[in-house]
Amino acid sequence: ASTAEKAVAKRYNGYNPDAIDFLRRCDTPQQAEEIICYLEKRQEISCEYAAKLRKQLKSKGVRSFGAKKENDYYLRQDGF
Image 1 (tube, helix red, strand yellow):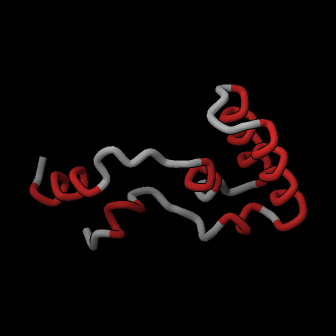
Image 2: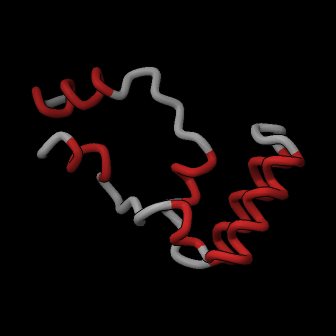
């Protein structure tokens, strides 16, 4: 790996994306709903939190969770 890749890997080592990180990668409400269902089914989020996310998705839309995170988001955050 290049020096840049090693630096990024070290910075985000141990970082575990949360539900919002995944939702920010979605393009459509349907994709967001699939993510919520998946995380809920795997018990990575509670039923209550899933319901809260669904309510926000329905009332405010997928971008209400934040700007879209594109591919290589973390690399670009470090200026690579």
